[in-house]
Image (cartoon, rainbow, N blue to C red):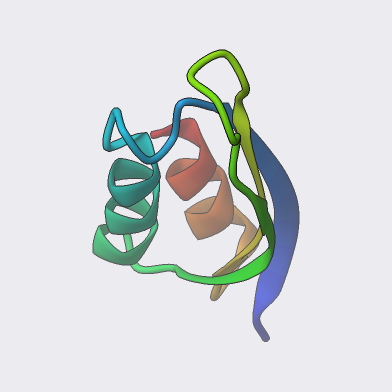
Length: 68
């Protein structure tokens, strides 16, 4: 049984490399993800917002992934 949780990430996700780190962390820890929405900031002052669904085989693994 796969379980999931939706998360929202905000900030300068692309230019800082944070988005890549988030996705790498999920996969490295044994999870999967689905990007539900991604809104890129259009100026240096605007944040990017990403909404993801993070999947794991069980609750314990999901909690581990989300704590990273």
